[in-house]
Length: 449
Image 1 (cartoon, rainbow, N blue to C red):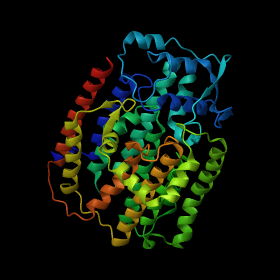
Image 2 (image 1 turned 90 degrees about the vertical axis):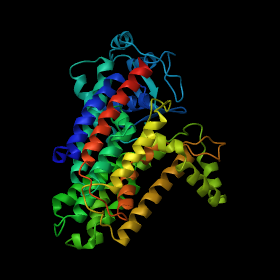
Image 3 (image 1 turned 180 degrees about the horizontal axis):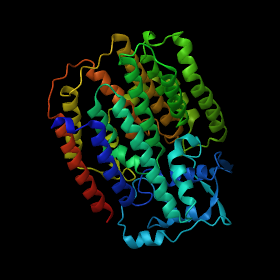
Image 4 (image 1 turned 180 degrees about the vertical axis):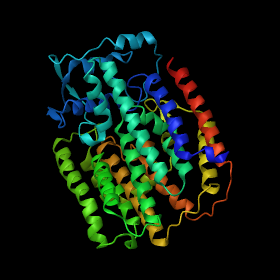
């Protein structure tokens, strides 16, 4: 019976159903930063890839209906923000929203500073969906939903092949990539879903190529790694994640090892560098931050900053956010759900159908180093460019930023553990996902309707 519970197929079925439920039943802009993601995705869809500075604002000239639609989606007549009270929606509200149509003759400057600097790569699925549907209708609600749907499709496809490719921990891949936070991001217009799925596939391919019985990597495989590297580097400039490529041993590269990997990574470094140069030229302070004062704090108090990073990472709220805090960080799930989710993940580390993750000492060190460097870099950037200017005892770190590093961390942990066979692990995981899907659906209906 267990053979019928194939991890990637279970993931496919679960994410299609719960993902589409989230797409249509989570109201517009009730996901973190979704108004700004919509504006950026729309601007990419109409080939306005470079943002425009206007005094102290950063955004672009878009149809006025975009901002009107966003404002109308809330009950306050303006964009929703973090920690705003959740309010009920109705089908009459959706009917009202469906009345907004794009009028290309009415253009307004619209700011979206926290997403305007992202490269178009972060919005390829969303913008393609918006562009495709715009060929048939100019209703803003349909454009919005198309962006969500295509983002979900891209996420499902990339993660499906990630689960299929990884030689170990397939069920843990399923759990992490279908946790409430992951699905909520994938079902929205968020660029984080693009990054998470690309990173999952990139890391899975590295494991597949490293531990397969194949003698040498071929040109096709190197090109796949190069393409994924470029997309990851351009999506929120996540260049640090590419360090995992050095898990591939020298024995797998037929020609010069470092030269080959340099050729693979060089396009990513060049394109990311060019986009970063542009992004720096249009950067404006976010959340009233002040990078200079925070840099000075780090230089003058390196030990205190390190303690601050550790306190931030090991904050229980960051764990909750990584598993799933929905809405604008204002919809927490029941504590019991978080406990059960962590328990199920732990069970899958000790009981699984595949063999022990066969990392050698150098590979373990590389994973530890890469995870630490990447997480530290995220904390530093959040401290510099997002944390309020007079705040030096807090880092504005959100749990979803750590999701790409959960899988490498699990692989590292599992490399020290000899797993036990449990023939019903697939059934256990499938039942958990089924019950999780019911619980999340009821939670959404309870909160919004």
